[in-house]
Length: 106
Figure 1 (cartoon, rainbow, N blue to C red):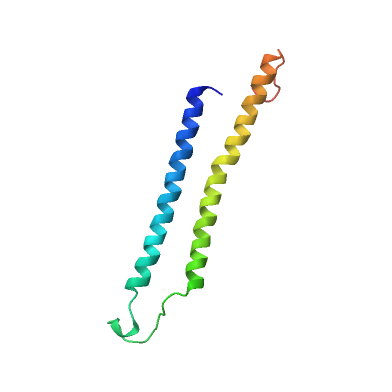
Figure 2 (cartoon, one colour):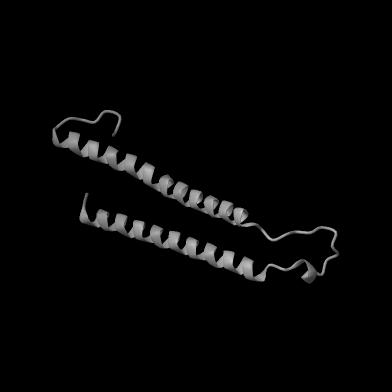
């Protein structure tokens, strides 16, 4: 792998880590905002035909697990194809050095 390509991979991984951190911080801020500003039943200006209670801790945990699952799937959707692509490139480079032709990989 060339140095320029290694730099591109490092920059991509760094940007992905920054994205994950931003999503995590955003979710924490959103959770705290919901906890602090969720209206009590007496503060709602709509007639009490339907009562919506504050989400439970289990609901917040479920939402957090969905975010974590999404981030893992996002990482794997980049990592697995990249791994397969780089393995293919490495195979082509190795067989090309030996003077053989990689059938099906041209």
